[in-house]
Length: 458
Image 1 (cartoon, rainbow, N blue to C red):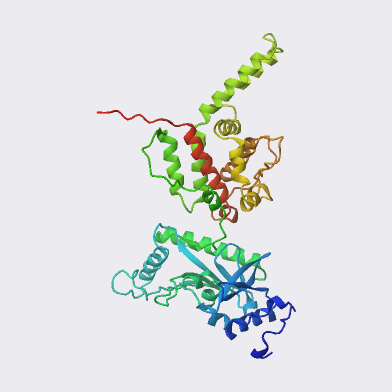
Image 2 (image 1 turned 90 degrees about the vertical axis):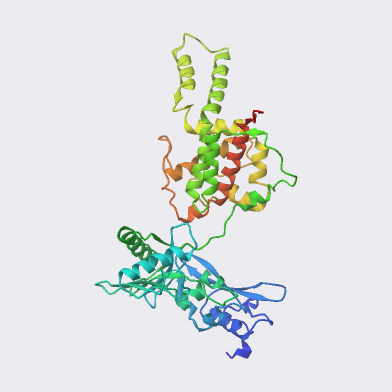
C-alpha cells in the first residue's frame, strides 16, 4: 500500500483506526505498520488541532500504552522499528525481544537525590575501579560522560552490561517524554542490558530480568556500596481526589487553639515525609491510630462491662457470667481487647458514618476503588449501602486487613492468609487511595484527641 493510500481501512477494517486528515505522513506510517503487525491503535485528541497515536504494546496478559504525536522526538525512531518484536515486562520500565534474545531495563538509585546522580555516581565509581578513563573532576556532573560497564559473558552464552539507554528503549518507554526541549537533549537514563538469553514468553523474560538484576545489584551493593534497583513504570495513581474534595482553607491563618499529643504527631509527620514508600507511610499512619488504642478501648470496655452488669439476667453466682465480665475487662498489651477491637473502638469514637460515606462514595473514582472489585487481595471492600454493617466497622476491618498484609500477620482463627505485601509490587503501587484515606482518618483521630492549647503569659 502506498503512502497515498494510508487512509484506507487497515487490516482490522476499523474506520476509527484510519489516520486523521491532519496528521503527518510519518505518524500515519507508524499507525499503518502497527495495524500490519496486528498491534491495536487508537487516535486521540492531544489539542484542539493535533492528534496523537496510542499504540497498545503487549505486556503479559495486558497491554501498555505508548503515545506518540507529530512533534515528538521519538517519532522518527518508531518509523524504523519493527514494533511487533517488542513487549513490556510487568511493572518495570523494561522491554524485551524474543527474536533478539534481548532484555533492557532502566535502573535507578536508592539515594534521595536527583534521579541520575546515584546511578551516575555508582557507575563512575565502578568505571574508576575497572581502570576506565574519567573526565576531569568527578565525572558525575559532566553531561556528556556516560559510563559503560560490561560484566562479561556467562558460560552458557548470555552477557550483561550497564550503559546509556539504547535508541529502541528511548523510543518505546517514558524516557521519550522527558526530553529537555530547550537543549533537545535526551534524559540521562542508564539501562541494564541482557543479551543472549532464551526467553519464550513474557513470564520467562520477567523472571530472567528479576533473577539477574537482583543478584547483580546485591553483589554491587556488597562489594562497592552501590545500591541500585530496577525502575518501575509509573502507574496511574489514585488518591489525590480525596485531597481535591477537601480543599484548603481560604481564610486568613489563625493562632493555633489546639494542642496535639507530641508522640502521635511525630508519627504523623514521619508518615507525611515518607513519600515514595507506601508501606512505611501506611504503617506510620496506622501507628497514629494505635497510639490512641488504650484510651478508646478502655472507654469501650467500660461501656460493655457496664451494659453486662446492668443486664437483669446477670447472675453473680454463675461462673459463666463472671467469666464474661473478666473476658471483657481483660487487658491485652496497653489496651483492652484484641487489636482489631481496639481499632474498631478508636474509629467508632472519632468518626461518624456520614463522614466516611462522603469520602468513599463522593465520586465515581473513589466509589469504584473502595466499593467495587478490590485490586489488592485480602482487603475488605466498603459497602455504604449495607445497613446491617456499621460503616465505621467496615472501615476498621479494611484498615486492619491492609495492616496485616503489610506485616503479614493474621488472627489465628482466620482462614485466609494472603502473602506479604511487598515493596515495589504492583499492589503496593495501588495503595494511593488507602494511604490518603488512613491519613485523613489519622487527622480526625488527632483532632479528637487534642486539648486546648494553653500558653503561659510572662
